Each structure stands twice: as structure tokens, then as C-alpha cells.
Amino acid sequence: MRLNAPIPGANYLSDTRNYAWHRPPDIVDYDEAVSYLIDKIDEPEKKELVFAMLGIDAHITTIVTTILLQAVSKGKIGIDLAILCAGPLARYIEISAKDVDIKYEMGIEDKDRVAITPTLLKISLGMSIDDPEEQATGDIEQSMVQEAANRGLMSMPEPSDMVASPEEQAAMLGEVTEEEPEDELS
Amino acid sequence: MTFDDAVKKSIKQFLKGKLLKDTAALKPDGVFFTPEYFDDLEEELLDEKTDSTIEKEEELEDEA
Image (cartoon, rainbow over all chains, first blue to last red; front, side, top):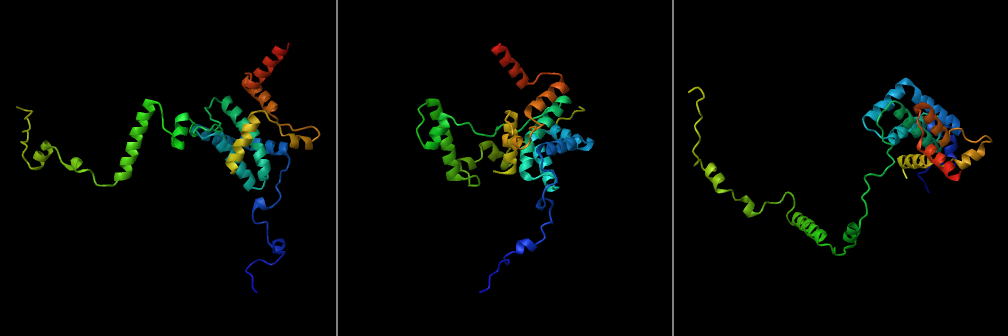
């Protein structure tokens, strides 16, 4: 019986030095790693890049993630140590931004989250809404959804929508008298 | 959990002032880059008290 699989022990013979993150990382100490990352940020080019990213409203978490992934891909630090270094790095960028009066956003707040309200909960559970205002809003929304479902966005319009107004019909038949342009010189 | 999520969670914990207990236990002198270190650095650089320093001072005043 033939099996299409590597022979036992093939992993010991394969070349695992292809990528930097396949080798043991250069830095394994927490303080050393944070110090290395802070020194990296303090380089003039990196600092310019960080401030430019903050200038285009990038969150500090995004910047930190980018720097950490770079360090991991170069084999400087392991991925688990990178996660531990995220806090100090974010804090250092925050302090630097405050120091030069750049507006920043940390990016750890969950702004896109939809707040769970009693009305939302009732709707999701299929319960009736007692509040008349909410009921009216719900009815309108439901009728709009129903209409969209029945007709669809690309469906043919209703016959009443298709009939042009008498003025439009007259214009199409050429029955409208064109206004003569006024002669400005006279 | 993605790497981004892990980074966000790590930052949240650090900003709350949580320490790396297990990492600190491995070193006899403890870790150097603690939340307090960054609070002091901020105070030095910006010449203004951080929120955590104000809280600590208020606690000390209440105790007194």
C-alpha cells in the first residue's frame, strides 16, 4: 500500500531555516525586547513614520501591531513575547504623541459595537413593541422591508409611477411653445 | 483570536495597570518596564500628573 505522506522523521531532515521566525528569536527577555522596540521607535525615520500614521488618524493599536509584526518577521522576538510588549509600546507611543501635541486614538474602544437596547432585544426575539412611537417606526420599517422584498431594487416600477405628468407628455409631443430668447442688446 | 485582538487585549490590560506576574517571578529584580515606569516617564516629559498618580495621591490623602 502506497501512502502519499512524508516518511517518519522527515521533519528532522527538512530545512527549517527558510524563515526568520522558524529559528529561535534573538531576544527572549521582556525588558530587553521592550528596550529594543523603544529604541527602534526612537530612530528618526521610524518616529516620522509613527507620527505620520497618527496624523492620518491611524490607531495606536494598528501602529503597535505593525511594529511588532515587523520584529517577529525579522526573528528578533517571538510572537508571544511580542504580545506582552504591546502594552509598554502603546504607552510609549501615547506619551510621545502627547509630548509633541499630536491628536491620537488608542483604538481599544469598541465603537462599532451595536448597543443592546430593550427595543432591539424585543425585535430580535420577535416580541411586540408596546410603545406606540416605536410601534409606528417598526411598522414603517417593516412595510419598507416588505416592499423591498416584493419589488426588489431592480424590479419594474408600478404603473402609476410609469405615467408621465400631463406637462411632461405635452413636452414630449412638442406641444410646448418655446420661449424666445430675449435680445439683451435691444 | 487574531494577533490584532491579542495586541488590543494586552494593551487594555497594561493600561489597567496589570503586572506581568509570571514574567516578573522569573527575574529576581522584577521587570523594569512597568506601568509605573511609564507614568513616571510621562510626568517627567510632560510636567503634568498622570491620572494614576492623581488617584494614588487622592487615596493617600483619604487614608491620612
